[in-house]
Image (cartoon, rainbow over all chains, first blue to last red; front, side):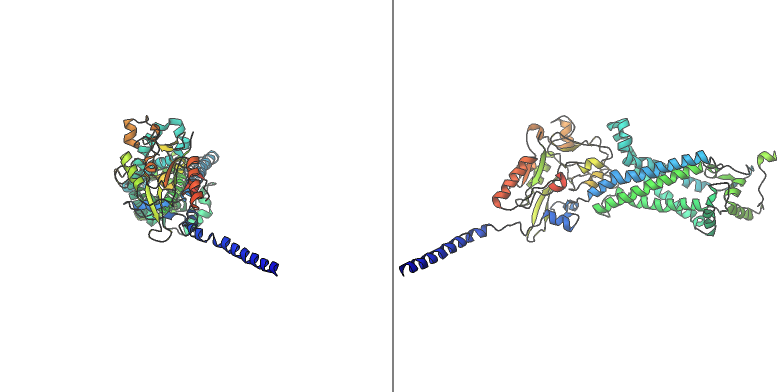
Length: 335
Length: 198
């Protein structure tokens, strides 16, 4: 019997000890509360949104963004993607033009010069064109410098000279944006009449615009190719102007993502714009005989107008009353 | 050589802004420019935390990568500095920086920016250490005097740590071990591609 009682006592004692052991950590549990369990967590915040923002007590409210790793994608765009887009577009366009020039050569005036000229662009039109063009070339060079200057030009001229040049290029880029924008607006307004696409353009494109071979599809004042240039200038110029002013007046209308996006749109449109303008300059100078005069003196040879803008010439002739749908004899032949 | 880093122990920061004030005073930073700031997340709500942030002196710094004139350089201590003589104030480093560190004085026309200013880790710039020119452009060069950045030195709760990355990471880990919690080193993953697990 006594042994049974001893067992009971042992069991009770054991239970009590077990209770004590399990109860003992109870008071220290209160100390183990993790104050960060409910607190904001960097990883979680970055997963929820692409930025961590809070409150700051300084006036600059933009500085309330604590972290914004999206800049990494923008860095990748600026240093890799843009250089590829720009490089392929611009170098590619130049290569195509060189090959084209070497195989096709200058598009000659097939019927020669008549010696008679017709006004194609008046003084105001030429002024607007050259104002925009001059601004564009300076804007293009100073803009390309921001993207390609560091790998291309900096190693050649050194840090100080490159920085000095880039500083002036930045000023030129900022200030010349104003006459450029005015030019784009004026181009839009003064040539919109002749640049609405129509059926003639479809036929013109179908016949390859006479680029290959010696075909001369009819066209009004502006052919489909010129209309394309027009709309690239108007839409592309509009886009670079809007995004450019956004970059020039930083954070007035948008936050950091907006600024990054503005830079992306600005630079991509700009490099494609430059590539297009290289083609435009080519065809207006060494690419086509008699084309430069249109923007140079403003007067083109009647035979040039007949070959490239026959419908426009007919309109002009009808207006002035001089009939002339037959090709004029070439000056050389007449003499 | 040591690899200098900043570490903000968010569980200790009380948003006293002593670091901000110390920085502004030490370098005579002009009005409107803040090399360092304190951001409070979830202000007034449970789980609120304050983090002090300046240039983190990143490994493979994005600012240096996108700079069109290559005006940034990294010192032997891993501090990211720049030359104000070369900077053209284009603003690109601000678009690339994950911490909003670059600051621009508003000078001239439009919204055009002056030469960029940012935290130098109290290490000055390319000019001769401790020279008048260096002080005028970049502020004090404490590192050259063997001192650490003043913001961290001034920190009232020792929340902000500055120094060799391995040593401050060790201090932080010991804290986390002792108190049993820690929300991690804010910004380390982004700046240094490493995190201190707690």
